[in-house]
Image 1 (cartoon, rainbow, N blue to C red):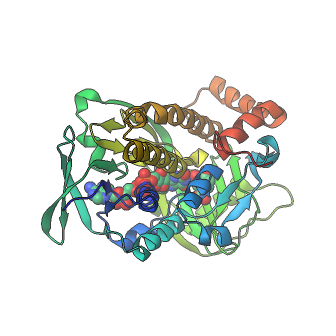
Image 2: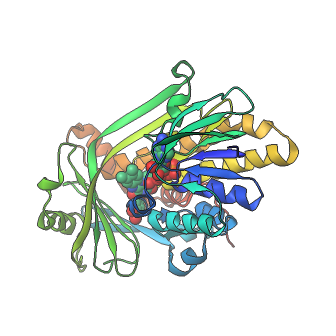
Length: 393
Ligand code: FAD
Ligand code: DHB
């Protein structure tokens, strides 16, 4: 069969693109290799920039987000127990961030797609993409044990880091930039009301910790662990004990509760360029990965998607190819800003045992500058809420 845009992957990027296109009368088919329940339950990001909320609003996907999202005006940094609040709204002229889990963003977008009766196939694995240098590229996919071909005008490669889209671009045309960090995050979901109203990012000599949340009843916390650690190394008591030490400060209590889920996430920075080849366009994790410390992975996937949607609409509405031709260049400016910020936050807040004493002093001094200089905190605040965020008055 034939569609206008063939979308590989039902993560935030693919689902949002499908919905934005649908609103403009452009047909698409979403192919997702996992079952729906799995896509809707994968615990990942939770912090949305204003830009991201605006795009979701444009897609008509904010009914539940407006009811349940937690809007934060500030964020707390902690250094060996000494806390400093960054007033995001004040430093950025009114920008804020919203806590609303990626699982919920994905559920809302899938429900919208199903309500519209638009095609989305789960357990449909794209296996190859051909004819990218023609006007009718073809996606081969396997669904219910049968191989099918989907012909389209364009292919959107929204299939995440392990997808096939990026690998379809000839290696000889591709440049990869990569960095792996010498630590991981152990993340937990706990059935306990958050012990803080705003997120706490903590540097501690024992390692990083982060207190986030999912709702007034559910906390989300992360603790730095070693790359060789497994979940067996981290019984619940050890997790809470480390969180107590690393997040602790005088006169404050971290409330503990049953741990509902534990996962270990490796930390890497990765960029693959270009983000397009013929009629294939990559968006989100298929093209780049950031370490999670700056909360940018999901936000950057949404930003790419918005850029791709705008470029596709320029083509469908005006026959203009300039925006599509510029897609990689436009994305790369944002990608590298976000890469630098995510790397900065990661190296600022983690304990790296292999760092020289000299570098450890630089790290401490950077932190000190951040909490003593309004100029330095403004730079962090601007990046954290998202650059070019619309400023509310
Ligand atoms: P994805 O959400 O990865 O979606 C890609 C989809 O494509 C998947 O559903 C996959 O099943 C599907 N797919 C893959 N191959 C095929 C194929 N061949 N055919 C069909 N479908 C295919 N970001 C943060 O900001 N904060 C965090 O705390 C955070 N934690 C994370 C924890 C983990 C374990 C991971 C993996 C990521 C985390 N991220 C975090 C990053 C954030 O979740 C991603 O940046 C975001 O999901 C990117 O969205 P996406 O749509 O580009 O890709
Ligand atoms: C969350 C994850 C992050 O990486 C971050 O920087 C802030 C919040 C979260 O999962 O809530």
